[in-house]
Length: 235
Image (cartoon, rainbow, N blue to C red; front, side):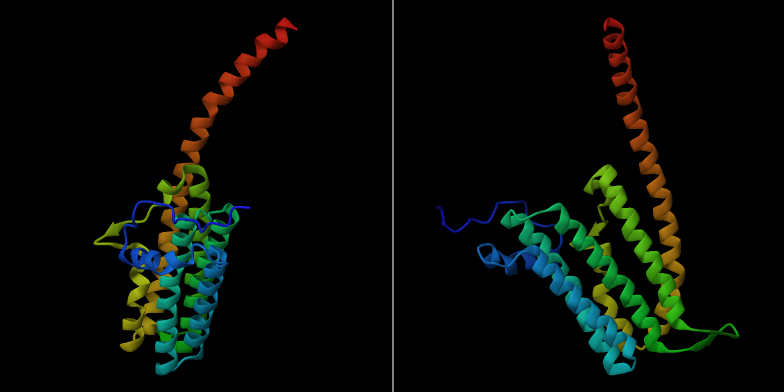
């Protein structure tokens, strides 16, 4: 039985700074019992703890929650890097990662909404928890549709914009600024408007990808049917 340690797979370096740091940190874990799913679960637990802190409300709790969300966002890069350099990638692990991403993001917005309590906007009493839930549901829809787009068009179809070594999702690293400056309520209001609008855009993108995929499959199906007809005729 060959028990030699496995050499980390030589794959291209990540584009983003946090992923590069994550790869350095998980490289020693390649030949251990730790799997990418363990790191995904750790990310989930840290993120849920952060959401609970945000839901508690108050300056100290909100900032503690923001710190945990930032930490969770960073840990989210470690599972993928370990999977790549350790040859431990799996379809189940990939979808588990997406599910945890969605759960943490949804609970983040709900927690922020619950934490700031009821307020008055435009003369109407609005429960921020519902605004956070609206943003969270929109985010959940975005994650689901991006997963479906990836199944149809591959990862290139859901590739995030990258500038200066940072991706779109890295905006969560700025969350402590929101809590330190006590602008959580405006943030929740903006998220409750912006997230549904972005979800609507993703819905349109999903339909475009679905139509392209259907158009690509149609000629193949037609060709297969035309090849089958002479075979039946000869019989």
